[in-house]
Length: 210
Image (cartoon, rainbow, N blue to C red; front, side, top):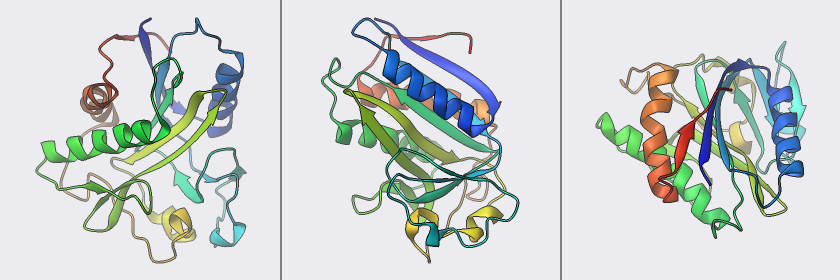
């Protein structure tokens, strides 16, 4: 069953979240897996058990409480969102395997530019010299995954100063552009996808219209 790849463009966060929920709730054993790529208009999102005390000064950026794991983070233009909507039971894929595949795809992308990135078991995501480059937050329902990963490509990082990113007051955040790796979001998607599919051991992907 072919894995469908969709590129959604610049989107509002909440409708895409609701679409992910609906897709997961309505899927059955015959539903093809999908990966959605998008970038969001500015929004802070809080995980299901997140504390609002980590939202310091949101200003005019909306704050949305959602149903993924993790604490507070920021999404905005110039950040590549990767949403794997996968039947984990059908693929015999564990959550840790999926998280590792997401993280390692960013590590591999960074390596293309000569950057040494690494994941952390203590705080999911990808880091370069302890500075966060990508964040991961998943939800699994009925054996299927949704939500996913945010990869900072070339974005305004100021909103991260309005929160304690991922619940850590001293955590610093960067993006590929500031690390000297220049690429568009489209280029980032095209370069990241093969790495992610390889770590998932999936060779059956097909690109479809959003």
